Amino acid sequence: MEKYILQLKTIFEGHRSPENALAMEKYMKNHFPFLGIKKPLRAELEKRFYAESGLAKEPYNERFIRLLWELPEREYQYAALGYLAKFSRKLDRESLELARELITHKSWWDTVDALSQIPVGALAARFRDSIPLEMDKWAVSDNMWLRRTAILYQLKYKHDTDESRLYTYIRQNADSRDFFIQKAIGWALREYSKTNPDSVREFIQNTKLAALSRREGSKYLG
Image (cartoon, rainbow, N blue to C red):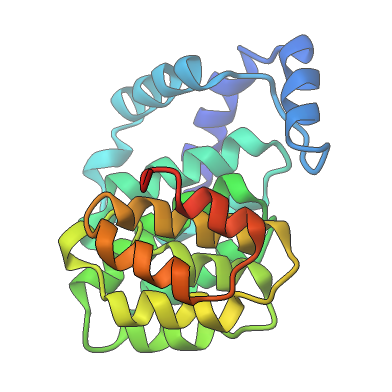
């Protein structure tokens, strides 16, 4: 996998922009260094990388993801997320442990929110007999990012949403003062209100929620 890492680094480094990097780092509260490659260009460069390297035709390999995650610049973590999405159908139950590692390492909303849907949401939909049970543990974890993931993993489930589980997780975290938890609750409710507005309206009316969660969750309810 090291040769693929070197190939991607060579492509990315050729488009480093210190000016863009400063703005991107500021937007992410200076938690991570950036190369300064904006998303549209990065997507083009990743497409070029896969075309030139042939990696997409190789078997799925977790080591590629782990190596990218250890690189300092944030664009490499985004590239790892892209690789995960490309190979999402190759993931199995054991892939949840990798997801946990990524969620709890170099944690911030940009990677955690992507991981909550792929792979976590995709895996939970595929393995409904086991992975949602693990989400029950994440929802009350000491790690805030795991709790946020548990609240958000059903974000795109629509009519397949396990409403009871979603509402349980929200109640378990409703008294949190953490911005990212309050925002996640509001986001999850807002998204589910597109599918079941009456249920969400009733839940909000009968549940003690932070003002931020209530405001965000009610946006589409009138």
